[in-house]
Length: 568
Image 1 (cartoon, one colour):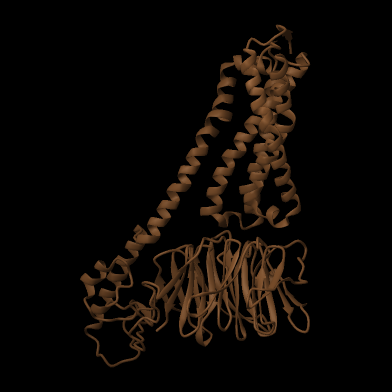
Image 2 (cartoon, one colour; image 1 turned 60 degrees about the vertical axis):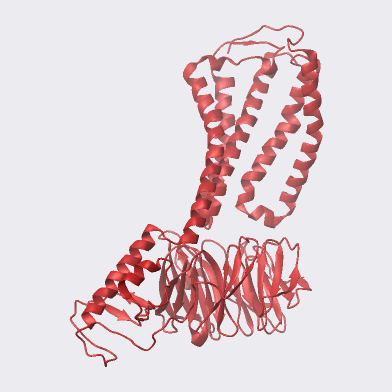
């Protein structure tokens, strides 16, 4: 590389302008360094903060900015103070240009990726629930942002053969020679400056648009798929009613032609418009009542169960509701007298009148799940790395002696009469069973091979009498199922497919039946104790968690409310 000097003794920029910039940058440098050191220190010492992948791109951004402030900015301040590059040698100019370009563009790339990653974590968080997903959507983009830019500028500034004419009185020693190559300078400007600058506001606009669409969809519940489902359901019911006109009314089970449809426990109440699209129903079926539970296709028989003629659940609107701030995990549990839930860093204890009886503030432990231990008379709080217990007045918070096993993070938990079951997060999950008395001790470890297959994760775990309910999702097919197992033997009692999606939570119900909520399609699902779907209802908004409450009521956690519904 040929390099020649073309320097002068003093910068052509007015001295007043240089000193204004000098004092402005210098006054901001020290506070910026102190704040960056504090954040980096908290990141290093806080395992919970480190474990959240949404913090990785932010801390990378802070580290790059810290390097810029502590190592590159002093060179700029020196130039502004004396008015020329010091030391005035060509090799230093090459280093300064490379270092400045690398830090600035890396910062811009990281900021762009952080904007898009926020969108992924909010609207496609299931992409990052597995180790493969974390590598694809977190670590690889960060590595590309951090490595690609310095390598590109090293190739253009240090390796590329062209002749530089450095001016030691200019900032960054004047223009670099590769900028005279049209295609290379155009690629550099478009790829490393223009596109990231445009993509940051575009990513923000996409995120805001999707939030508005989600809210609109939740409020009106009138998506095209839903409308098509309603039309199909109406058409099917009308066809079945036409077929039933010729049948004698007194029967419990009737076999017709093999090509007809099998309807088990059909429940659909036309008098009460369960769908927000009530005009579609009213025009077809007037005020006749027909209860509809589940529809299944069969080539062998046609069965009708007339045991009930009204819906068990009134989900049109809650009987009562309490507003809370959005919480990432939507943790929800109960004991005999109270509901407990998370709101940001706060815990609330709510009585049967939906009054807040106690509150625990500023926990800052990122609670992923909560369960009640009757034998301990304490709630158990599950975080990624620690297990806590707290009394039923939310006064005494204690760290339990349960430790991580092989660095697996905790995900969900539930209590039977004498045991605590905890599942792990991500690929190859397992379940640990702890005896609670006389002290908390590990009893059994249920291995991955017993619980699920490859590429499957456990999204929820709940206990009921002698049963254990597991929500298991296949990360490849995006299919979810509910498995009911024996607490003693861990043998599968039944397994039922729930459909697509990843955001399912379950709760025990009466008579060893189960209720499930699906935030993916906004559905409430009731499952019988024999493993058949008894009822599927649409819900007017996304529902993230559910528990069976006292006096035949269910409590549903949405993004903003705790809703209480009656069970008839």
